[in-house]
Image (tube, rainbow, N blue to C red):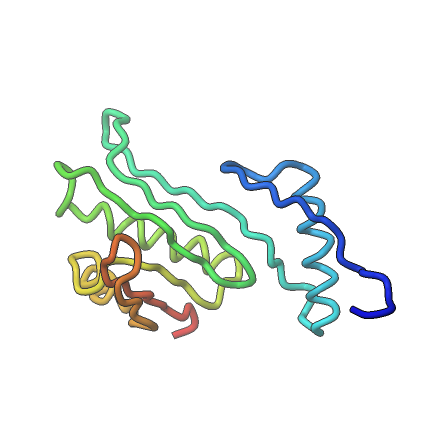
Length: 155
């Protein structure tokens, strides 16, 4: 820039693995709230993700299945649902999914989502339970095709 002062500042970018600390959480809350307000978004919508964990145990207390996800802005996203190999085929996955759907509905979610292998057993599992394909991600994680499925809670 000729004749003027440079407004460029040196910024240090820190990269690390792990969870956000209190300073980062406060920054995110403050800045996202301001952004949503500036964009005219409904401020009564809770945009911060709330984790959700569901577990299934057999009659001895042994963990045999887990469903894990988050709820944010009226959407329940199921990030994981897995049943121990010896316990598969007994309806445990279906019960975990039903419990996830019910919990999301009780908190006001209007939509549910999940990502899974395209055309694999899990894809068919969700389709049999009323979930629909929303998008296919070709050569995604691990070079495999994935699909995002959704289900509206009011249908």
